[in-house]
Length: 292
Image (cartoon, rainbow, N blue to C red):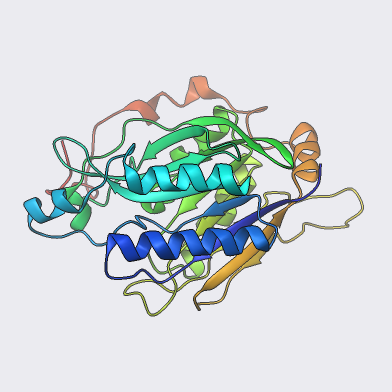
């Protein structure tokens, strides 16, 4: 299989839904001209990750998962023969959701995913969390790849990537909106390593508040027979500036690695992990603002 080219659309948002739509369309066209097979937006592109305090304003800012904004990218994916993962503030009851819809090269909906781990200690307390993690086949010009998503804070929980791996994910697409510094980048590296899968993350650039670019692709392949020691799994780390960054994933190499290495699911002991299903929260992790 040829290398899969993933366009990380590290873009500054505009001041309106209409302008974000226009800029997003232009970015996807540019990404395709650069050879991209998949285009990935940063978190909640429709509104530039803006979560108004006024609930009425917040609800009015949301768009439907089958409305004009999202369907424009469905049509664009079909036109360009390029998969597009578009992000948006989704209309939902009782409160909007932080969502991503992935369309394949034929404009077919692969999945719509809403962020499970909402940041309830901050503005996302005004959003509804998602219900589950999804993995489906994504058709690209380079062939079929099994894809799932996490959104930003999801990646800080090892269970998110683990569930996606157990559901068969080879590639996780991660829209993001926060500072990607050493420790958060290390989280992504670790998730890719322990689950033997690739993780592509797209962040907003500086000077978007509380963001700094550094979109990445980690391919998860740590050891190769012809190398005496481990290799760097970071295929690409963007700078902090606005731009479209193309990361190339050697899916053939990843698949061969997954068939032979010791991580992932082969040697797990799930019968020993029952405590992971406990909902009890003990000191020092009790938080008054935790969503019930």
